[in-house]
Image 1 (cartoon, one colour):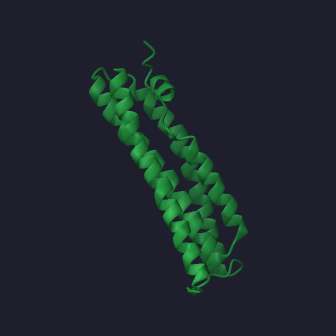
Image 2: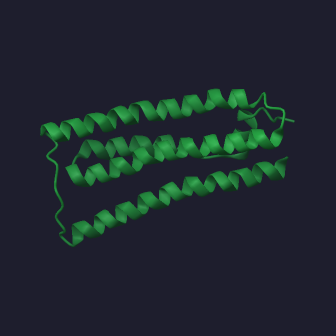
Amino acid sequence: MEQKIKHLIREINFTYYGIYLVTVLVAIGIFLLNIGNVNFYQIEETSSLGRNISTIYLIYLLISIPFSLYGFTKRAKKWQTIENRELMLIKYKNGARLRIIVIGLALIMGLVLVYLMKSKSMIFSSAIAAVGLYFSKPTFQKIRKDLNLME
């Protein structure tokens, strides 16, 4: 079982580090656009469009992170009751990947909004998403605890 959990961690980490890779690539792209003085449509933070976008993003952020973290924990308790260990690990893997993608999307969207809106508050919002993503990192002990595999 230990080998299966280690393999599961590798598979989930592929998604986890993939999100961070996309985030870094977006940040590099934004940096290069700024250096090249490429001007895209800037959204004024205080305009009605800017406020609406900020509000929608913040609502997504405030709903997705707690729901992803808490909801995943609740689902993991249900997966503990599955007797087929292979099926249990597959469900865990899919759930963990979905959680990482949902939170990672908040991180990437926040980074793009920093550029489009020149908003300092979006930097802090992106940082909140990065912290949420950090808590989604799979570890051997976390998986054993989530699936109650303490044997």
